[in-house]
Image 1 (cartoon, rainbow, N blue to C red):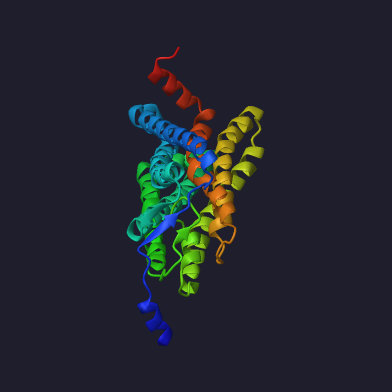
Image 2: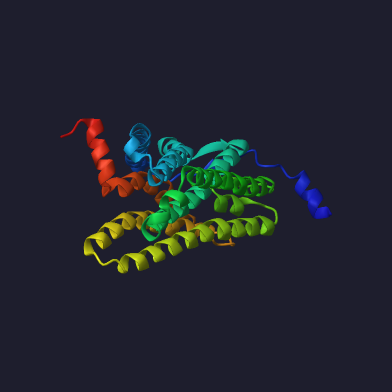
Length: 312
């Protein structure tokens, strides 16, 4: 009871200080130019992908429907985290209100959880296309694709509501310095002056359900694809199938290896510099590379792109 009264009497933190990606003035200008270029390039790439998919009937297929959703998500993703990264590099450590911090956290969790489910849906789509081609039109009909996409977005929102509510309800009574370039789960848990066991449990369970669950679906799909491809009598067909899945596996590997290292741990992360490096991988590098990786070996996208740009 006395402990509760003490916490009530404490001054609640009204804002946080984000240290940003780097506190060294001598390299902040260079990093600002690099990350601004990456941000604009990511927006351009994903906008182009969405335009090509929407404007060409040749790409009105389940695989490109999910890719369009992923591109839309990536644009939102970088727009949630990149502006605060750029502000930190331009001005140095800066203040962000408690409400703005929790809002950024909410949208970040929504998008990262949605991306996990979308990647699993894309893996399932490739599984059906390669392992059950005769049933593909039925199993991946428009209603199913729309249902999978909506489930991804709604599931991400539900998880985010639970996690953000738990984190926002904690008491923050100082210090208020976040060693990160955006409002992330682990740095906020480190600053809480109340018991965080329940919040960590919610974080851990959601990580198991979302991250590990979707990863298992993706890995099971690709394992079934590998088995099916190895049984194909034609070497050319094997190369084509492996070429299609290789790009998917690269994206899944980069995203999950960084995200799982951070979010599937119930304890607070102490090495925040490593946390920032890994955060750059899945908040900056992955959104920029996804359109390139998915479309680099895709002949249909190449044909449509040349047609759009009027190349011979």
